[in-house]
Length: 139
Image (cartoon, rainbow, N blue to C red; front, side):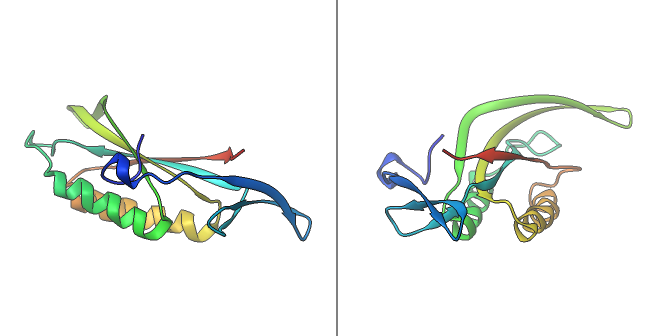
């Protein structure tokens, strides 16, 4: 996984644990405070449209940059995630890429991803876009 378009965009992350008002939090060297109550969202984006034509890389970058702008970071796995699934009587074989975001666990963020799913289904001309979330503990 990487952040940004190249290794030159990576910044070291030095974090210190501390308590604020009795709540465990993380403070980074950059002055950001993050709750340890976080959710990891994983988004599978198709590398081909349902008709088999290649998704332009610009659509993938548009999505990555939109997420980075809102959450200040996103990881993008470059290996192909293959899938097979059935809709009605049609079997689909997918080649996907995975985006990973660790964000504050909040109703506002969850609603953002619900709305994002709707937008991504249109952007990538898909019947569905797979987005999962689960609680994580950042150490």
